Length: 195
Image 1 (cartoon, helix red, strand yellow):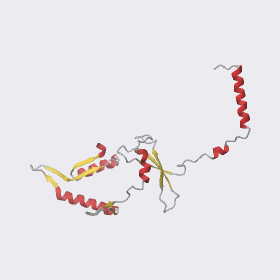
Image 2 (cartoon, rainbow, N blue to C red):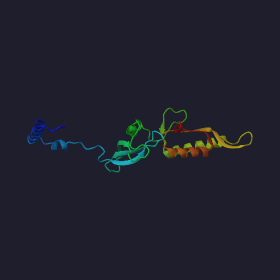
Image 3 (tube, rainbow, N blue to C red):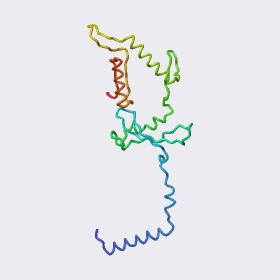
Image 4 (spheres, one colour):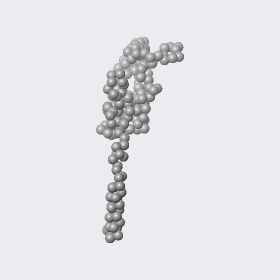
């Protein structure tokens, strides 16, 4: 753009006008003072992993707490971890809703058991739930384990237990779950991450 006498005068006049208006008491300091603080400014951050699928995207979980012993921290924000090599700070639509998943009032946080014939679920302890699961697996495996097939070949299998692992398990626990299933001799073994 060529600077002519006319454009120079226009630019000079505009500069003087801005200077005069600025001197009339238009102070932006109160406006800057009203800038809201980020909701995560006082939050504690923890690194975690998204559990919606076996990709295991890294997430940053922000929680608020006042430090009191009887107050449980409340998750206020979850975002992708930019330092994570898997997702580099991005999240899929399901991963973006993790905060709602964590804070849902319908989220089951304790084991539930419904006795045979009952219509209602009852809360039980984790120890009771794990002991019951272990006992049922052992009893079923002991009762139905096949050591040799009809031709006398060693097969060491249990065909009466189906082991299904969901996609909310990360890769490492999923791998250990498959190893445990093979150790038990399970034939019907599937993980949703493979689908």
